[in-house]
Amino acid sequence: MKYALILPDGAADEPIAELEGKTALQAARTPNMDWIATQGRVGTIRTVPSGFLPGSDVATLSVLGYDAKTCYTGRAPLEAIARRITLAPESLVFRCNLVTIVDGEMEDFSAGHISQPEAAKLVADLQEQLGDDRIAFHSGVSYRHLMTMKDAAGIKVECTPPHDILSQPISGHLPTGKGSDLIRSIMQRSEDVLASHEVNQVRCDLGENPATSIWLWGQGPMPKLTSFRERFGVRGAAITGVDLFRGIAMGIGWRMIDVPGATGYFDTNYGGKGEHAVAALDDVDLVAVHVEAPDEAGHNGDVVAKIKAIEQVDEHVVGPLLDKLQRFDTWRVLCIPDHPTPISKRTHTTTPPPFCMAGDGIVVDRANAFDEAQAEESDFHIDPGHELMEYFLKSGGKA
Image (cartoon, rainbow, N blue to C red):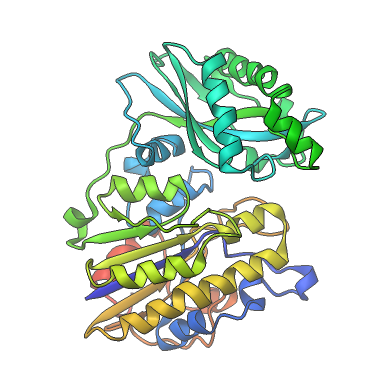
């Protein structure tokens, strides 16, 4: 059996007024996802367990068949795996966003989706001026970076994701709890490092958002993840442009496939992701393709970009994979956003997203398209969400 898993991150949405009540999935032209829905079945999946924030970390773990209640330690540790960062006992790793704060409000959680070369310079100078024997800054992708802290057993802080507080005063969302004074101090000191930095001066001259501060969140120690092959007997490979998905994939033992131009943004190489995924199916049992662009469009409140991103995924990833899969004797395909990122809210929600699956042994249901309404009207609702992977790989009949 050959399997393909496509994750258009954050593609699910709510009815959008400017689309006359349609969602981005309903407005987008998605003949390949619709084919999966009509030739297989649709449903919903609760990817965010009770008591967890609706982050891509716990949602992605659920989609891949892992219960966050037993293996989740934080978002940053998963990204640290992607960066091949090792943590000593009693150490913590924090997600470190480059952000734009204006007049005390979170204007932009991505500093204008700062470029990789610019971000690398900023992080290098943060390390030079703020790093020491205990604190270290590690460059990631665009605005997404990490900070490690040794001897952190006494740090018990609550931190807020910056994408959850867009256009809000940061004063009510700064880190709290034991050790929060230190975390706040590091964030505040970063402002002095970045204020007159040449990278920011150029960005301001060009009318782009400068990185005015770092924002620390998503902290935790390293997790222990069971191998996917050990759990399900399936060899996997993954394609992504972001460290979160890369870290989870590496943590469960999947082979990583690097695609030139995979940026984790609207300009990602959709065609390259599809081509590399198609080629990988000759060597592995399952290939997973993660595309961040719909989520970024949701956070930006950009409905046009979200529709376009979904259509690009359908044309350049889902379509080629469907063509390839049908050359094998037995196959299955699953298309699933990890969570909704509604245009109106510009952040994630806990609403169970839709999914569609088709292939050998998958029963054909009554859906005529892939969207939120069709999935909600089905009789196929997976809760807890981590049970879907076992069903997709091993079952396929009536749930």
